[in-house]
Amino acid sequence: MLQMKNVCAGYRRLAILHDLTLHINQGEIVSVIGANGAGKTTALRALAGIINATSGDILFEGKSIAKSRPDQIVRAGLVHVPQDRALFGGLPVIENLVAGAYTQPKSTISASLDEVFELFPILKDRRAQLANTMSGGQQQMLAIGRALMARPTCLTLDEPSIGLAPNLVAQVFNAITRISETGVTVLIIEQNASQALAISDRAYVMESGAIALEGTGLELADSPAVRKAYLGM
Ligand SMILES: Nc1ncnc2c1ncn2[C@@H]1O[C@H](COP(=O)(O)OP(=O)(O)OP(=O)(O)O)[C@@H](O)[C@H]1O
Ligand SMILES: [Mg+2]
Image 1 (cartoon, rainbow, N blue to C red):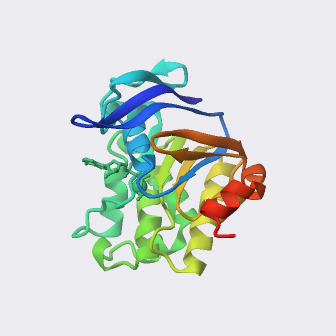
Image 2 (cartoon, helix red, strand yellow):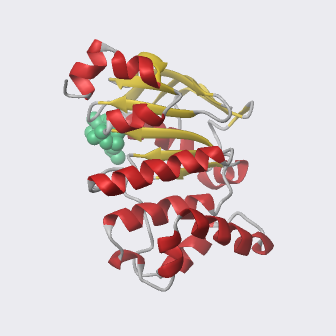
């Protein structure tokens, strides 16, 4: 469904991704783990069209999106939840959610809202609350909910559990699993390797802008190298 083929990308003259190749099959949950600075966020930015690949190609449902604009990529069904969440802090929850549906016809908004509220009931209760007064966990749910308002077929999440207390981490991963069960393909990038591997069909370890290891979530969770470097065991 989504393929990065020998992608090179970076910032100005600074090359970060070096021949990055990975794929996600329809319906899978795939995670990418790796140390700080490995280039994980850069890879998601390239997928979202925020930065352009300098070489290689990115295919989404068989079509190249390597030169597409971010809004065209969202319209195609590939939607990104950034690491900093990028909410409209001064706006209420409901307006943040509606903003997420900017690519969708108005007639679909209320059905999408119902789906998001079913997944995250707290967002329904707090629909009038300003986004920047929500807790960290609630803001993460709002960021995911806003992305779902664009009706993605594939969702990419950059460190959804960052900064969250353990019970909220569990809630967020649980929500990701439920989103996957609705048929949405999921790519997640995580520092929290153990939780990410536990819910993933497959996973990649990224080092210095390229893939160093790949396997099923279970295989990587059992791999001595991964356990030592990323699971602290
Ligand atoms: N806007 C930018 N301009 C210049 N360099 C950048 C920019 N953003 C990231 N980098 C550099 O790119 C490299 C990869 O960063 P990236 O954010 O992709 O790593 P990451 O794997 O997501 O790390 P983390 O786990 O800390 O989030 C780092 O060396 C970083 O300093
Ligand atoms: Mg990052």
